[in-house]
Image 1 (tube, rainbow, N blue to C red):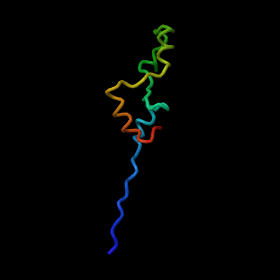
Image 2: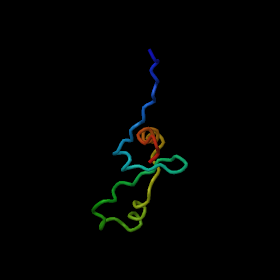
Image 3: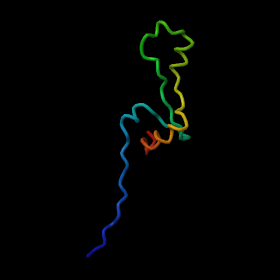
Image 4: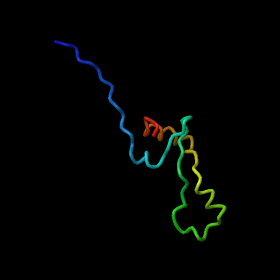
Length: 73
């Protein structure tokens, strides 16, 4: 009887995380800022400009994000 080969399974990407986070070339997880979707007329232009920029995911959460994106989407 032939010995069965051990196959390492492929990991699945968490599709919800793939839509919300991107990994940079150096491996940092980036996210969009909150509070930038509606009621923008009452917010100052300076704040709206800042909200449009991407932000780095906090250090404690970055490990979880990287686990959900095993191939760095």
